[in-house]
Length: 252
Ligand code: 13P
Image 1 (cartoon, rainbow, N blue to C red):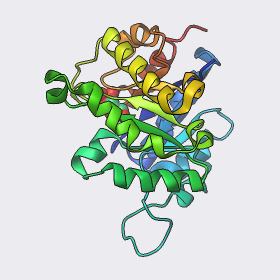
Image 2 (image 1 turned 135 degrees about the horizontal axis):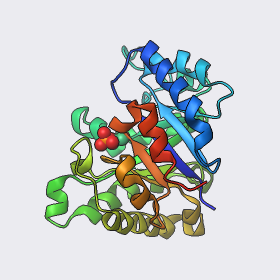
Image 3 (image 1 turned 135 degrees about the vertical axis):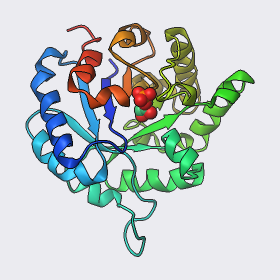
Image 4 (image 1 turned 60 degrees about the vertical axis):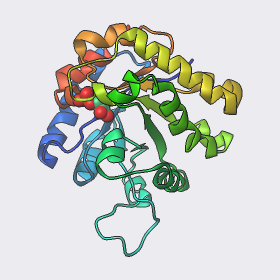
C-alpha cells in the first residue's frame, strides 16, 4: 500500500506566529482525518523552529520548501539541509516550479540539493510539471520525463525508496485552473511508468501527489484516481479547515 500524503506548501506566506497558529489549527482538526493519511506542512525557513516545536506529539510532519546546494560555508542567505534536519524536519520540497522559473533552478542545481537532502536524512518531495505552452504543443510527457531522468534517475534504489513525487502542472498553480482528474491520472500513470523503467517494482510504492489549485471541492475526485496518492496544496493549505477538508477526501 502506498503512503497517502497531503502536504501543505505555505510558500512565502504567514508570520511565524501565524504559522504556529495554523499548525495548531491543523493539529486540532487532525482527528477528523483518516489515520492512513500522512499530513505534512512546509512553512518558510523562519518558521521551522517554532512550528516544529508546536508540531511535537501531533503526528504532523514538517518539510522545508528548499535547501542549499552546499553543506556549509560562505553562502550568504542560504540554509543548509543539516540546519533544517537538526530541527526534526523530515522532508524537503525540491524543484518546485516557482524555484525553477524564478530562481533558475536546473537539474544540475537539483542534483546537488538531492545529495544534500540524502546526506542529512531529509526525504525529497520532488516536483515536476509542464508549462501551459508545453502542454498546448503536446510536449508535456517529454518535459516531465526529462525532469525525472535528469534528477531521479541518478539516485540509488535505496534513495529512490524515500522520494515523494509531486506532479504540479505550472498552468494549474495558483490559477484556480485544476487539471481534470483524468489529466492528473494520465500523467501520474506516465510518471510511475517512467520510474519503473529505472527502478522496477519499487515505483509501485512511490507516492505521487497532485498539486495545482487543489481544494476541498475537487480533492475527492482527484484522490479517487488510482495513481494519485494525495496532494501538494498551496493556497488552500493556509486555512486549517480547508487543508483538513482536503485530507478528509480520503475516507476513514
Ligand atoms: P496552489 O494550490 O495555490 O495552486 O499551489 C500549488 C503548489 O504550487 C503547491 O506546491
